[in-house]
Image (tube, rainbow, N blue to C red; front, side, top):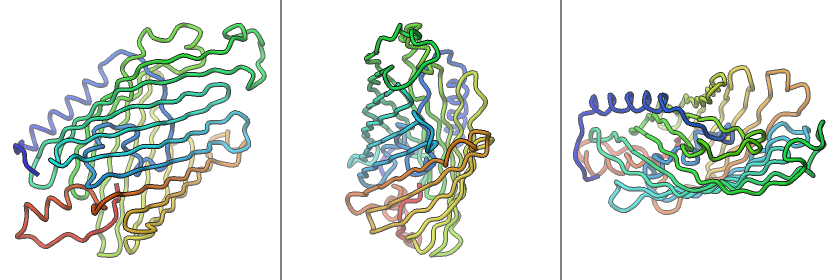
Length: 329
């Protein structure tokens, strides 16, 4: 990769200051959909990720939450990450349909990222995304304690613009990131819409490390933290194991919420399928049969790993070639 080399210590200071800056902003946003397999779905909530991949990928995800509870969340996501030829820019596109009771929101956004070298094999990516949210509220889908409230029984169909931003710092075997999905909801929702749409600011923080135990055995702990104004932190901790560069198994724990089992299989060099099952550890677990999530990811082209693998072969020719394994984040 071509580009100016930046002192990593300066960049780490900048990342920390950026985190603090994100926390200091007093605006509002809607709550984002929840994912258990977030480690394979980073581009959906952090636009800085889109240029970090080595080759274009396509992802489809379906999540059915709290089975057997009428009106429980259902989420469908389609997305793509596209690195450009100069290896410094990236583009991404997402469509997410999220249903909860009478409320349906369809998000779409276009993402752009630009990255700089921190060292010969580590990078910092800056990303922004812009798009919109189509909100539909159909009060025929449910029975309400007060039939005339809210909206006096009138259905709603509105469109709201969205702008988000993120940072993503990564190397061959680790990553850290932060993102804000939307800055533009301050004053956009009227009082009636605000009764059914959560309009507070959300921050997402991610991280992970890949331990290469052997050529055929890798271990990756990871975390995702969602910070929503006025709510306790939503902390997700996971541990995945990759065997023979083909089969993944692991577990995830959402503090005071759910325990999850995860499994995945690399069908071919460019195709990955993953599944997760959540069991609620809170009182809600007595009223549902858990949550299911399926993901399928296609990598188009020769690359199957993160961008640093290809760059290390080009830039560090005096070092042994890295093992070509499927993408683990």
